Image (cartoon, rainbow, N blue to C red; front, side, top):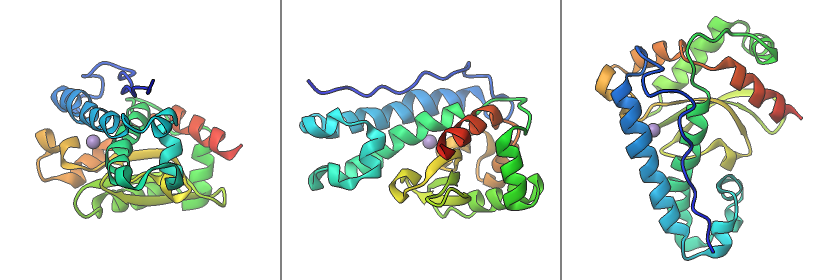
Length: 204
Ligand code: MN
């Protein structure tokens, strides 16, 4: 019996991130786009019980677990499924920049403002569709990176701590072509408590 992977429910209401991310965008993004990735991912693995048994994150970490003929689908749809499950959890309004992660960011980047600059630049310069990330790398250091399409940092031996989706579907209804404005507003909805939790776990 193969396991069906379900997208997480939003840990808040669809309108909880207003005015930074509008309710309609959240509904379409979560219920249609994210669900679409999950459906296609489930379909891709349904005839491969061994693959379907594994956690999706495990597959993204180790391509040896994935049969060649479905590798591209797992990369795109499995990546989309996992990335969005993670993305929803790092969003929340009115959170304070604090905790061990805040100290680590200040130490690594110099200040919050410097971090914001670097993260924003990474997000702004993803060409086409993709994501910008704050990760803990294989050396246990903080790092900012980009991924294309639905690629996951897990495939590069890095642990996600924070991310911004810069696919147009993430912001186009409200911001149209103004990706930079969306990125700027994004800093109002970072759930630093959650990012701190991911940081502490990744460091173990
Ligand atoms: Mn998306």
